[in-house]
Image (cartoon, rainbow over all chains, first blue to last red):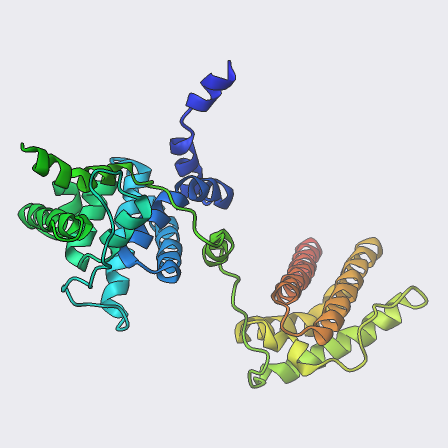
Amino acid sequence: MTAAAYEQVDWEPALVQRARGGDARAFERLYRSHVGRVYGLCLRLTRNPANAEDCVQETFISAWRALARFQGQSAFGTWLHRIAVNAVLARRRKDRDWILTDEPAPAEPGEFVLETPVEAAELEAAIGALPDGARDVLVLCGIYGYSHAETGEMLGIAEGTCKAQLHRARRLLRTRLAPEGSA
Amino acid sequence: MSEDSRMSDRPVRTLSELPRELTPPHDLWSRIEREIAPPVRRLRPLHSPWPVAFAAAIAGAFVLGVWIDRELRPAQNPALPSVLDPRLQPTAFLDARDVRARARLLEALPAALAKLPPDSRAKVLASIATINRSLGDIQAALGRDPDNALLQQLLVDTFTDEMRVLSTVQDTSMSMQDTQIRSES
């Protein structure tokens, strides 16, 4: 077997199976494989690295405890993302220090010119300045590629609401990233 | 779609080009591992009040110690501390029912041992001496580090081993007594 063939082997189902049997080392390998995506999601939803780390931790601890209920009907990563979104939403509800208003935060004045590629950092900042509802949908649909149905299910909102929030998020992004005087 | 519309939509389309994976500033695994590790069996607090059975256990242990000391001389005696910290006594670690059972077994041990053949008795005494040495060592270590969960667990396990030996001796002696009664009748 060549090295390339080895790389194509999907160890995840076996690792999940071992982790379900209580093998913490197998679960650690799953953690290493998925922590980047889970942290990326949590950071974009929370906009705070410390809170995002806490949510990642809660996600993997909850996943470990719920492994027996994971039936493998969805990908393990998708299942983890559902848990992560729940962790973020629960934390947002509990944490009084968080901004709970749905009003958009003031955007930084941009020098962005549409003819040039959008800088990733600038785009991330604009996403971070979106109101919670719009940002949640934009992150899940726009960045992580979930469908409206999946996103609506994760966030506990109707599919129509999800579409409306995505439309709103895009409109706000366009406004914020447009050069001064053109919005 | 107009040129303006295409251009203004450009930032939104680049969303899918953003990295989905971001590296957390810290490795979170150690914190997660601590949470998912199997729970260490919680032991009874060391400062629990002494139940009445404690006195019986102490008396039983004292009788056994004197008896073993006499039986094993001049062999090496188990190195139990002369004065044990009460927090390290069985009552601090075992259920009250186990403490009572242990006291009864210790009380009945001399009579039970007397019914055993000499070679069996020697083996039992050697086992008990080993267990007592272990208990002494663990109790001494716990005296220095009373909150060490591993040592506490080890002490519970050793008390359990001791109970198992005492129960076996009791059962064997009773079985031998029954056989003797039947053969005599």
